[in-house]
Length: 249
Image (cartoon, rainbow, N blue to C red):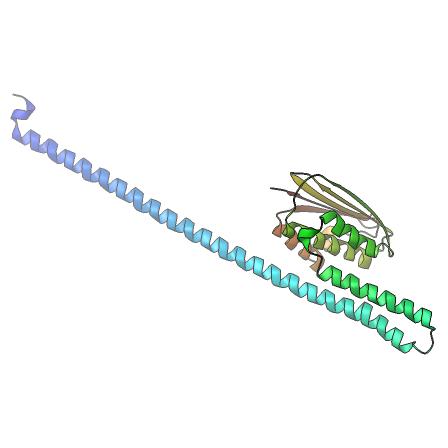
């Protein structure tokens, strides 16, 4: 007698098939549910990451704005207002030529401050020229060597602005703290990479003792904005060397 001639055996195989079907369906359902849960968790993680990144960017922006305000107040108080006050006090003791020279110097300081706070239209000027103009303004205070090699590469305005601000921050730190007599600035731009090197022969310092300074935090924030990496090398009495690099899309 074949198995098909035994109704009980046929029914048994039917129930086994139904059971396997429901078991397979249950397993597939569990996998789908777990997959959907995983997607929701990953989506939540991504959303949290985006929110945290937005918050960090906003905090960095506020920090940079506040730093610029502090720098403006410092420059106005220490340089321009102090110089104008000296002119006022000596207005009766100096001849016209001396007063005219003092006023020209004050006007030059104001022009430099305005240029530093608001650079020209970045879409209309090359980064090399922007840096060269800035270095020319301060070259009367220190010996500066500027080397640049630029191939055909279109730099975006954010890249130009943040590189320019990094140069400003570093040069300002050198002038204020390093007691250097020479600064070497090198900018190289290829279709694929941008590298910036700034080196001085000043006092130097132990990098681990200065990584939390406001200037270095500004540099770190601006480097992050353009996805650049940088390294600071310094030793006491051996000067300081800053190297930054970024890939160009």
